[in-house]
Length: 149
Image (tube, rainbow, N blue to C red; front, side, top):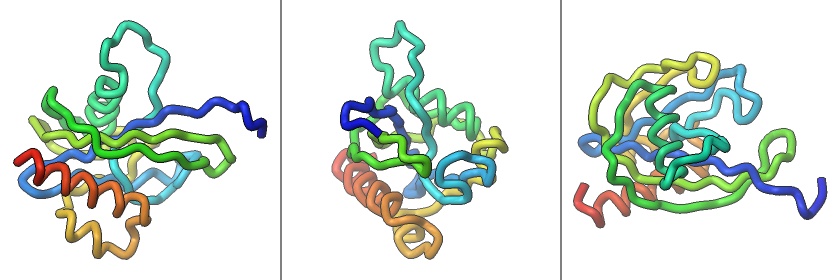
C-alpha cells in the first residue's frame, strides 16, 4: 500500500428516537466487519449533483438499509480513520440524525442481519458492541443532549 493511497469516505448516522439509537448487526456476507454491531451508514459514491453529499448519503443509506426516514436537520458528531479488513484506508464521518418515520427493519439482508433500538447506556454495556461504536454513540448522545433533541 502506497502512502499516497486515497481514503475511501464512509458516513454513518446515529439515528436518535426517544432516547434510543438505531443499531445494526452487519451481515456475515459483508466484506468488512462481518457480524459486528454498529451504526447505519455506507460509502459515499460519486453521484454528483448534491450540495450536501455527506448528509444525502447518510439519509440514503439509512433509508435503503432500514426503511427509516430521518429529519433533514443533522449534526456533526465526529470523524475518524480506520483500515478495512483488506487494508483499505477509510475516513468515517458520523452524524447525529433524528428519526422521522418508518419501522426499522433489516431491509438489505446482504448488508444487515438485524436492527434494533438501544439506549446509549444499553449500547455502552453491551458486550458485543465494539469500542469505536461505543465511542461514536457516547459522543452522539452528548451532542443530542446539547441540542435538546
